Length: 66
Image (cartoon, rainbow, N blue to C red; front, side):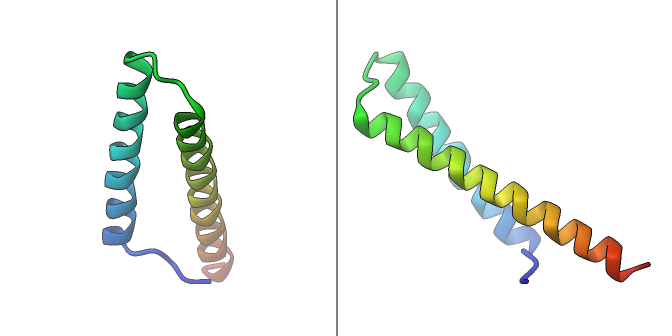
């Protein structure tokens, strides 16, 4: 499994922040349509996957260092 670099994680964080800001703007304008819903679902999936990858990498490192 590839371990993400700090730059890659930082770039994903910036992208996540951008999408979340966009979703908040849509919600503030009461524009919760199918497209916004898909943004929310996609970001939720992406964050879940990134967290799972990070946890796996941490566990691999802990196992390797024992």
